[in-house]
Length: 119
Image (cartoon, rainbow, N blue to C red):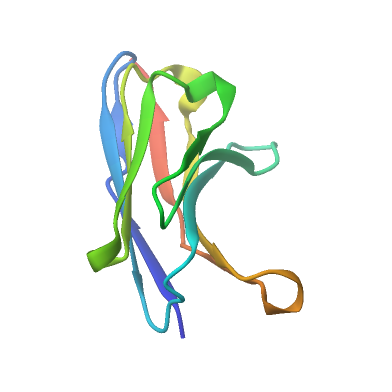
């Protein structure tokens, strides 16, 4: 059983920073992609950033230059450093872990952590 546990959300003023963490536990395939998604009220869940076990990263355009995703493979942990936060970044942020293809594809989600950017 794979579990993802997020931490690091909270309330921050515009222009501030937060760092999210997500620790994965259980039987995890070594080649995988970990990432972050977010969902605000009334909106669909959207991709924020992802990183493969080899270190390749990908970001949605609106966070490029402000957010940095990283991971520690030894700890099965992914981080999201969020700088220059804007009110529109307010959402519940979900950690995601994926590996495999087609019928062997496995997808796991964390419980979510609230990020609120407000003065």
